Length: 218
Image (cartoon, rainbow, N blue to C red):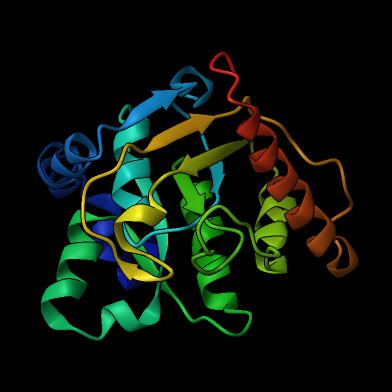
């Protein structure tokens, strides 16, 4: 734990996060007329790996506000940490740590495991990038590695409508309705091996896609 907080000291500071959640995230959720189903499926305590599809820059604050009951830690692309003001905001307010895209970032994956070991909730977007509107892209194996090494409950999360905000195609005028659905926690019974990491990532994406049926009791 000491090594983790020396690299990312904001992990142990929660006040700024709650301020951000109840101001910035709350405002975005209100403008989006956010609807949340299945919040009760997110455990109130203990380590949790939340896996969600990704279509907008605004997915993190929307997911955080949808969870609401506890802090959510996110991986964020390393480029966001190069701007002083933005870096401060996403670190100290948004509970984010950097991940380098385009290759397996073992440091980021290790950080995710350390945060989970601390008993926190970590949100990962297995696709590793924003997908086009209404579509999914093949998940990265790194998400599967975290799942198989952490061995914690996994909660699938489907985000619908956020691509109409700031999505793959850029900024879209207007504030559409956004819906977030949380599925029941599950685990993946596969051996922790490199051969199974992609299989695990695929299984997580399938659980996310299953929430498209709109079952409000999920």
